Figure (cartoon, rainbow, N blue to C red):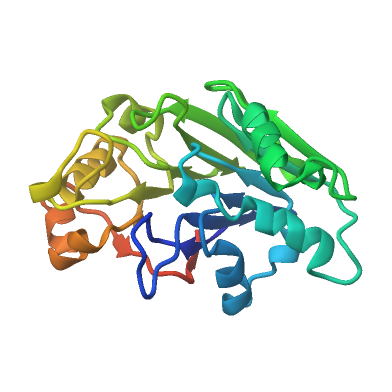
Length: 252
């Protein structure tokens, strides 16, 4: 499996971090996790084949996680020659289908009928979605918005867990148990802690509870970058920790 962190930022405009987006490659699957502002052009800048994305999975409906979806669909249809003909499936928590109907009402009916097969599908809690080549996608509720979920992507004996946006959740740590890679939000310093996001120390506690083999941090608001993120995580978690940037990648 391969992870590329396309966008490691948030809703805060940042000179080097666009909003949330991460690409997981497993066999023939090219799964984009979230698609926030700037993600599509960042993929082009990084040389990531945005044309080849096969699936998209949304963690929740905040703008910094979904705003580039219309642009991505438009790019597949009108931003390349020949236009896309291969199918794509977009997954998300309960309410994703209704969200797309609202987006189509704003952007145009082409969002649901772009000229290639597109499927938009709600994924229920802990439902196992079978992707090509034995890849499995499952979701788990997390405390952020009413619809927010984390995702697990597994292929054979390899497993990645992506927290999406979340507050403290022991249940999430238990669900992520023994994952090979925990891709976790790390939004705010302790001095600005709120219930809907994690601080570095809280992320460290989550990774320790999950016994994650490695920890990759993302979703940084600018104030958290002023603290020693790695040192604060290490107060609770002793495993390998990476503070991701846009374009960072790893095979695992």
